[in-house]
Amino acid sequence: MEKLIRVAVIGCGGRGMYSYAPYVKQFENAEITAVAEPIAERREFFAETYHLKPENCFETAEEFFAQPKMAEVVFICTQDRQHYAHTIAALKKGYDILLEKPVSNLPENCIDIANTAKRLGRKVMVCHVLRYTPFYQKIKEAIQNGEIGQVMSLHQFEDVGWGHYAHSFVRGLWRNSDETSPMILAKCCHDMDIILWLIGSDCQKVSSFGTLSHFVPENAPIEGDRCTKECPKYDSCPYCADKVYHNPKWAWAQQAVVLNPNEEKLQKALSENKYGRCVYRCDNNVVDHQIVNLQFEGGVTASLTMCAFTNEMTREIKIMGTRGEIIGNMEENTVTIKRFGEEPEVIDIRTIATDLSGHGGGENKMVRDLFAMVRGTDNGAALTSIDKSIQSHIMAFASERSRVEGGRVVELEEIYKEHTQII
Image (cartoon, rainbow, N blue to C red; front, side, top):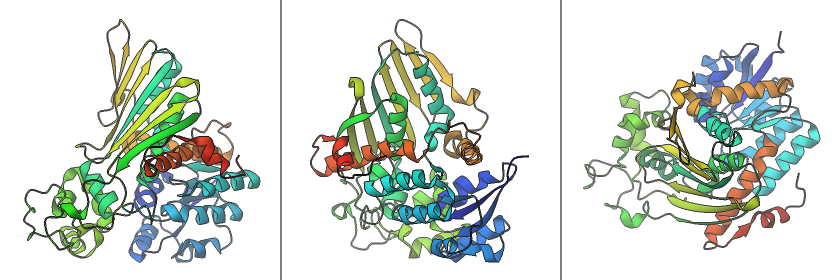
């Protein structure tokens, strides 16, 4: 019988509550035994859901880490700028870790986490869940099998979606890089990681451009900072809070507005909290569109386009090789291989995957891989880990530096040299 793995969850937001914890119940000999969450309503709901003892429920991560070790694994699902302190505390306490991305908002912290985990012999899996999706795994398989020859260029598109951007990056928790992380790190370290994984060689240099152009006070239709029916643009503005949070496409966002929402609770929350603000009068500063150019060893080039102004919330990709192309749309779950001189092959991922829930079918597989890593049965084959995540984060830091400095070409080595202990 496999060894029981006990899990503690730090942070009961969207990721801790809904993305990762539910999968623990799907595995034998794994259970959630503790939680730390500052919002009492969320902590109590989580404790009730997983039948936790009162003495195993904590208001803060610090209170949890002050206790004797009560699990084998900690899921760290707190805010970006809390990751470093919480991860270092967990490592020193002897926990293995599932760490929500980004690893940290600072490159030196990312590197220190990797070094500390290596020194203490602990395992840290970063939630680069895209590697586990059947969509990207099929693309990786096609590249490795030489379906399009040698990869020469790759274009990744992060279609954020107009409602998702308004919710998360204008009104929500990731709106201001002074409090969290820049957009290219908070949202797009997933994309940096998948580009790096698919190309399979080291990134050398980047350049980037991007701005916050639309969601600014100059575009506000009224003086007040609340989104109300008195606004003259109420009927025509797609970003109206009532419209966003009643749109089935963005229904998932209601849980961030208020836990277990009903109409009365939702309307009350929108009249009081940050999610009911006018999108043109928030304290947001992250870009609403950005492009990044990347050069890899061997002359392979890549680009990433992140944009808020898309109808769908999806990722698209085009990979060009010496013998063909691969074109994919994650929302549609299709991968098309166009070999030169042949008819296109269209692959419907839904016909080859049994579970596409949870980030396109990746979350369940990632948690499974985590438990294998902790038990030592993965033979080093886990698709993501702290060591594998460092370079993609450095790519993001270099991209933001380039953007801020007007598009200057930034070599990754420049970022590395500023920090002495590189793994």
